[in-house]
Length: 171
Image 1 (cartoon, rainbow, N blue to C red):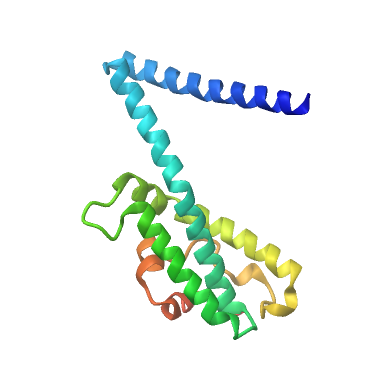
Image 2 (image 1 turned 180 degrees about the vertical axis):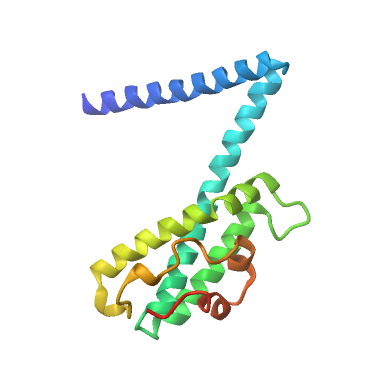
């Protein structure tokens, strides 16, 4: 019974999302677009958002790793964290085609636009990490940490890790 209810709720959610897309397309029609054109545009935007989600998650992980590198006590994990940052950067490049002649500009712009959100999420996650294992990090208070992301998207993607670390205060 629970599985059946879950399946029905998923169907309702899909239909609700579909009806919202159709409604936005109808609004676009009232502004002079054809239904097909408006609906195709809506589906394209939805796909762009979906494609950007993994890149946003990788960006959050990069920022968490930068925090761990800056404030972590374990020097043995530094190399592993740096290697993972390189892999996350490659994943973002693969998702956005940033390193090609024909990047996915829409996904790339969305990921760049969400850098502040990725930073806030990474900040909150790092606070949870500190609470769970305070002895592994030399942080007396998160109050001195920048509340806004101190880097741009391009800086996170292109700068040497040591340069990125200099943007954070010693705590």
